[in-house]
Length: 163
Image (cartoon, rainbow, N blue to C red):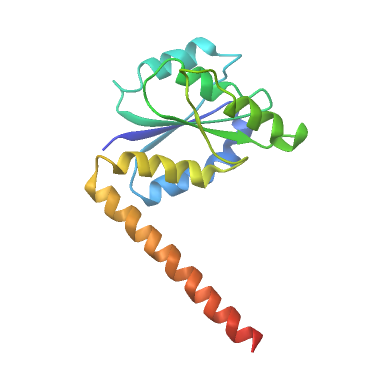
């Protein structure tokens, strides 16, 4: 099974990406968390992306705030799917991060989730990997069934409270 890389622009982003790591671990997917900067360590970021396939990765998740170019920098050096997590920062409540992540030039796609949307980033990575892994696809199907069951149970309990 492929691994998923979770790359953060700085150590302070870990709280925002932890739900992605936790979700991937629940699905039994090996993860590697690293700190790299599109601006301060661009050579390291490019090298990581260039060698990601050779190193067993199937998807890269990149989280960054403010001028959030990390996902795009990584995507420019690999054919792997890259999922960007715009991190909420003190500037513009993360809107700057969202726009920096989602506005990619033609030819360098980055799938982008919501600001601090780490869990959805992980689930998107699981969906991508599940295309080639029947076991993982079954786990994902079970996850969705349980999610459905929880909402149905929550609604039933809520209706009882209203009566």
